[in-house]
Length: 209
Image (tube, rainbow, N blue to C red):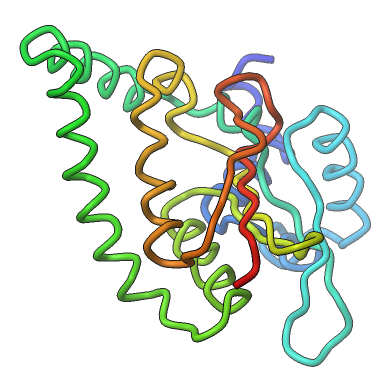
């Protein structure tokens, strides 16, 4: 599909709105587009079939769970991706001038600043609280993130990665989220899936403390 034509359609406008809001229910979107919830759901079914959105159950207050929709990594490809090309060019230049150590030092500095900012937001006393707060911080940064309970701990799911192409040549990019997990959630964690290597998500398993 051609992106310019796609974004002129109702489905394209839904994708744009989901990118802006991070996630929304069919009722939320119906109110925005002045359409019935059923009409919106029909569009969402097509988007889900095409691998552009995913559905998840969330609880809003004390009401029964609501189904919300968010974009997949495939949908992110519909938007201009010039920033990852620029980052790749910058990292190649750093590596050319200063070698692998220079690239590592760049990301060590980025990680330290990111950790400091994230620790100010992740203040819960228990692991599930920390996971919830970290997922919220990631969502605010444009990552479709959530966490789930698994046997022996928790899993952090990132359903999109704006730097997945860069990671293929510069795996140091991923060092940032690993340091964030180490210093905000704590405990032991392992990455079990990566978008950059063909996975459908970036998935991190964290052992319960």
